[in-house]
Amino acid sequence: MDKSYWNTERLNRLYKDWPAERITELKVQIAKSNWRLGYHIQTETGLLNDPNGFSYFNGQWHMFFQAFPFGGTHGLKSWTHMVSDDLVHWKNTDKPMVPDTKYDRHGCYSGSAIPVGDKLFLMYTGNVWEKMNEVRHPYQDGAWMDKDNNITKLSEPLIANPPKGVTGHFRDPQVIKHGDYYYAFIGAQTTEEKGEVVAYRSKAVDHGWEFYSKLDIGNDNLGYMAECPNLLFVDGHPVLTFCPQGADKSSFKYDNVHPNAYIVADDINWETMKLINPSKMRQLDDGFDFYAAQGINAPDGRTLICGWLGLPDTTYPSDDEGWEGGLSMIRELSLSDNYLVQRPVKETKSLELGSADTFNGMELGKQSLVKFRTNPEADNQVAITAGNTHLVIDIDNDSQKLTLHRKDVENGGKDETRSIRLNSNKIESCELYLDNTVFELYINGGFKTMTGFFFHEGNHLNLNWTEVEDIEVTKLANIDINGSEEE
Ligand code: FRU
Image 1 (cartoon, rainbow, N blue to C red):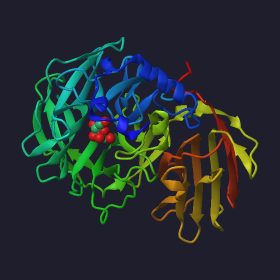
Image 2: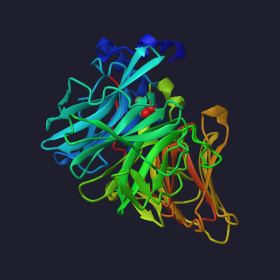
Image 3: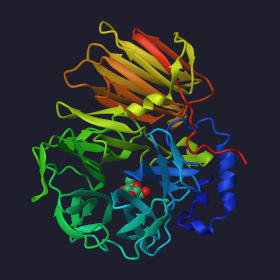
């Protein structure tokens, strides 16, 4: 799509004013794509960004995501609503929450959900341009969803203005309950253009919200804006995940345009809103495309997280086909030595269709799991190639450094790299979940993860390796979440 097509009017056009043919045309175009995903959440049409409203309610898992259905670009955002019985097979309810009030006119931005009584409460940011693209007014809005998945927005915002000393960058409320109060953790930018996380609280979820405190996380390297904060409890420890845009790279290393970070603490003091004995800031994922993760403490006792397979301020080759982005598999979190460990939830096993005949040079199915152990005496390499494109895992034995090389059709075929080391541990094993153009690499059982898109060339993916041990390829199912049929 010609970039000039996306002028301010089209980017902000109300959903009811788009002709139905727009979606039909996109579906026809997308049906021809060679890059669609088989078991990751993707859009039917248009763009997807942050996961929102992740929750368990009415006997089902709920996941919403930021969506712009009318093209592969960041236009007017709504919430697409997906439900699942097992965190793997997701269905679109076709009952999205779209921007249509004066308190969310320019986007139903990110937020979260919490079951209250027999309803699900949604708290989100209503983005409103008071002066288009210049003066932004964020409202923190609320909505109730009933057991038939019908959403009714509250008539007035829950929080009508940013707190004192905070600019119009005030968004992404995460609502949780502790004791007698509901707390909302909200990403903010101070008038000195520093990122911070602030907490509001109320005894009632749908009114009475008041500023409570800034969250003291023991670190002031939050750049100019901290997006998408989440306070989670993992093995009894508070873990804050957030996206510190513009964080200083000299004290916190990251290679993507914006990082998704986490901090582990021993405890949280709810009176002073202070993390006790917080760790340093660390990257949540060390790959190419992972951002705005949202987690929950699920009623079954697990801590679960899901990330956006994409980055802000970034374009992707699939934009031209009329779609962009995906959501990661749902991961279960645990702690080891105060570091987060991430694993695909156990239900992911239901995607496994049995092992493939595994030999060097084999053609790899688009939905595959490649597992191997490293040879501790040598440098190891595993490569997926397609035409002139490749995704290569290189493990240097001396330095115990794993480097992931990506050469895809983006960036003029440039080889890009991301690398990791595992503190004092050796790199022993890898599990690479491939879903056509998306990959999730779990190292040593999830001590590090590296996630991203790989826009390959051609239909054939080939697998080659040197030195690795016990390599095994498992075929995975293509369950075509939100797949579109040509009409
Ligand atoms: C993060 C983000 C959020 C915002 C949403 C808008 O990717 O910028 O801060 O609520 O996307 O789509």
